[in-house]
Image (tube, rainbow, N blue to C red; front, side, top):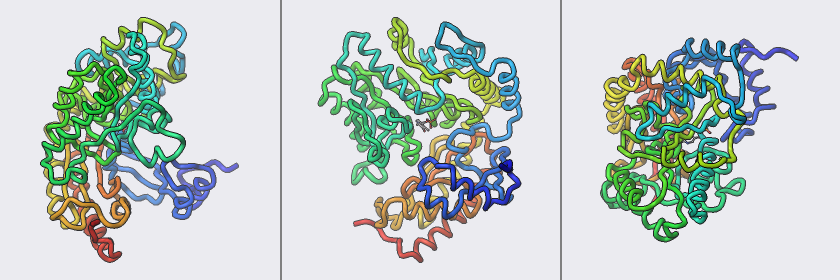
Length: 465
Ligand SMILES: *Cc1c(COP(=O)(O)O)cnc(C)c1O
C-alpha cells in the first residue's frame, strides 16, 4: 500500500477519503461527489490546503484553537510527556503529575468553589458525566426522584446519547432514539426570530421564566438540574437578552436545583473573561469545559465541580470514568496551553483589543442589505441573513438554504465562516490581531456581496409569511 502524504494529488486524497472516511454531520454521498477540502497544515490563524490556498480560519477549527496553530511549545510538551509517561489510568488508586497539576490549575482559574475536576476526553463525555453526577448527587441526598434535567431547545451539549439528549437539536433527536428519559427542554432566548413584538428585555424574562414554570409543573422534588450554555454556540451564537441570566440566577436560587454551565465554547477567554459565567455573573454548581482547554491540540474535557457537589459525590464510589480520564499527554498539553494563555495575557488581549475591534467591524456589517442583525460578545459573533431588513422573519426557502449559499462564497473566498440555518457565525482564534480582523472583514463583505447577488438571482430573496 502506498503511503498517503500531503503531496499526493488532491483528487486522489479525496477519492480515498470518500471511499473510507465517514465524516461527522455530513451527507457523505454528497461530499463524495464534491470532494472534501484537504487541509494540510496551519500556522497562526491561517490554514493551508492541498492546492496551496491560504484560508483565514474565523472558526478556530471547531471553536477550539484559541491560541492559534503551530505553537511548538505544545508539540514539545506532548513529545516529552509521551516519552516520560504516555499513559496511566487514574482509576485504581493511582494518579500522575499532569492530572494533578491540571486539576489544581483549573480549580484556581474557575470561579467560586469549583475546586474539583472530573476529567473526560471532550465535551460530550463531560456532559455525560454531568448527567450521572447530578442524579447520583440527589440519590445520595436521599431524593432519588430528583432526576429530571431541564435544558433548552436548540442547545448543543454534544452528540453522545446522553449529551445529545441534553442538547435540544431536533435534527439529532430525530435519529437514534433520543432524548433519553427525564430530560426536558424549554424555549431558548432567541429574540431575533422568536421574540415577536416583545422587547428583547421582556422576551428574555419570559424565556427565563419558562424554567420556573417547568420546575413548578414537574415539582421541585423531581428536578435535578438546569443546564445551559452561557451563550449558545452551535445553535447559532445566540446571545441572550440582558434580562435573561439575572432571572435564571434568581430562579435557581429560589429552587433547590443544580445549575450546570456548559462552557465548552465560552470557557477560556472566548467572552473576554476567563469564563462565560464571569461574564454573566453566575455561579454554576458544575461547569463543562473542553475545546479551548487545550486549544484543540489534544482531546480533553472536564466537569468542574463545586465543593457542595463534590463533598456528596466523594462520600461514596461514583461508578463512572473513562479510560482516558486525565490522559497524561492531553493534560500536559492543556496545562501548557493555559500557561501560554496567562503568560501572553490572551484574555486581556481579547477584552481590550481583539474583541472591541472585531465588534466595530462586525456591527458595520449590519448596514449590508443582506444582514438583519449583528450580535457579538468577546470573540463570538453572528449575523442574521434577511430578505427584508424591515422585519425579523426567516426566508421563505427552507432554513439553511440561503446560509449554505453564503457559506459557499466564504469558502470560495478563503474565509472559514459557518452558517447555522440562515445565521452566519464566527469564533476566531483569540490571538487574532487587527490585521487579521481586517482580512476577516474584507472577505466577509465580499462573500456577502456575492451571496446576496446569487440569492437574488436564484429567486430566493423572499420572506416567509
Ligand atoms: C462542542 C460542544 C460540546 C461537545 O464537545 P465534544 O468535545 O465535541 O464532545 C458540548 N457542549 C458545547 C457547548 C459544545 O460547543
